[in-house]
Image (cartoon, rainbow, N blue to C red; front, side):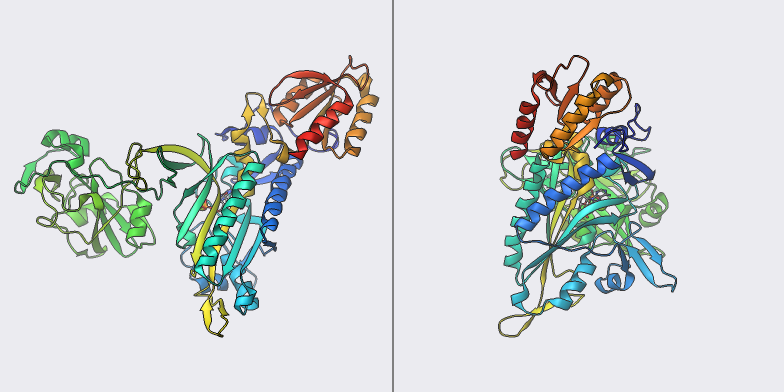
Length: 571
Ligand code: ATP
Ligand code: MG
C-alpha cells in the first residue's frame, strides 16, 4: 500500500466533539470519518483493521463449529410482531415503510430473522445443536451516539445465535462461546474480563458481558476483592445491610420546614442517614411505582424495572408527586399512600430488602414540611413487594463469598452473551421432535461482539502521547516504510517490493513530503514496526528500524527486519 495512492487524511487537530482518545486518534489518523452523528465512513486504514478483527472472530468461531450466514439489514415488521418486540422496542428501532406501506425496520439485532430460518429447517433433535452467526451492519438510533466507533448508530457487529435441544446443552455451549470470545479479545491485544450483566431489551434468563477495563468505559463494573465475583453495576448485588439499632418508639410527626434532602432531614432529626427511608416515585406503564430504599442507598432503576416487570420506569415529575402524595417534592413517605389515583393509575410500593422489618426509621409524612419519626414497617406502613433495589457501592460486602468488599471500576462492553431460553422460539414456534417424536420448543442462546467497538477499545488500551500503538494481529499493516529522502527512492521502492514478496504488509510512505511530516504521521498511525530509508542509508544492510511501542531506534539489515516481523507474526 503506497501512501501516495491510498487515502490517509491525517489531521493535526481532533474534532471538537471527540472526548475519548480512541475517537480522537482514529479520526486524526485518517481511519474513520463522520458522515452524520454516530454514522461513519471506514477509510482504507480503518477498514483494514475492521477486516482483521473480523478475520480473528471468524477464525475462532469457525473453529468451535459455528457457521457463518449473512442476513438482511432491512427486516419485515411482521417478524417482529410475531416475537412481540415490534411494540416494545423503543426509539432505538429505526422503522420504515416500503412503497406499499408495509412496515420494515433496520435490524438492530437479528433474533427474529434467525429463528425464522431455524423453524423452517430444523425438524428433529438430529438437526440440533446449531450455531449460526453473521458479521454485518446494525442500526440502533442511540439516544446519545458518542465516542466515535464506541457508540455509533450504525455499527458492525458479529451476532451469533445458537439452538439447542436442552437447557443443559445450551449451558455447555455458552461456556464454549464465552471462551472463544475471550480468545478473540486476547488476539486483538485486549485484556478482557467476563462479568454478569442485565438482560435488557433482548430478554432472556442469564447474561454475561465481556468487558475491557478502561477509565473511559461507559460501564461501571463491581468486582469483589476476595473472590471472582464481577458484575455490571446495572445488576450487581451485595449483601443486604442490617440495621444496627432498632428503636421501637411510637410514630411521631415532626415539623421540618423547607428541609428536603435526606442529609438535611437526617441531621435535623438527629437520625443516622441509613435510618431514613428514601421514597422515590417513578412513572411506569399503567401507574406509579413508589420505591423505598435506605437513606444511604441509591435506587438501581434497572433492578426496579425488573422487579415490577415494567416496560419502563422514569422519575415522576413534581406534579405527579403532588397528586400521589398530597405534598411538595421532598416529603414523600410510605405511610398512607393511595392505592390508585385518577388519571395516573395504580400505585404500588416496592421496598428494598434492607427495609424488611425496619423500625425506628424516619421518612417524609406525605404532607409538605412534615416528616415522621419512629416508623415501623408492618405496623405503620405495608409494602406491595420487597426486592433488591440497591445500587451497589464501593466497599459493599460481596454477595458471593460474603467476605470480600466490592470495588467499582470502569469498563467497555465489547461482547455480550445471553441464555435466551425460549423467549423467541416459543412465540415464533421454533420446535423440534425428540427421539419419541414428541414436540419441544428449541432453547436458544444469543451472542454479540462489536467489531468497531473492539477496534476502538484496542486504541483505548494501546496508545501514547504521539498516537496509536496497534497490536500486530489487528494493525492496518505490519511495517511502515518511510522514504525520508527522495534521493533514495529507488532503494525504497525495492525494499517495498521485497517486503511484499515476503508476505509482509507494508504501508510505504512514498509521498513527496518533508520527513518530519512522515515521521509524525507514522507515530500517529501506530503501525508496530517502522523502517526508514534516508539520506544516510548506504545499503539495505543498514536500515533504521524502530519498534513503535518501545520507541527504540536500531540499525538492522533488511534480512533481519523480515525475520523479526515473521517471527512476531508466528505468535
Ligand atoms: P450497550 O449497553 O453498550 O448499549 P448493548 O447491551 O445494547 O450494549 P448488545 O445488544 O449486547 O449491546 O450488542 C452486542 C455488542 O455490540 C456489544 O457488546 C457492543 O460490543 C456492540 N454494540 C452495541 N451497541 C453498539 C453501538 N451503539 N455502537 C457500537 N457497538 C455497539
Ligand atoms: Mg445498547
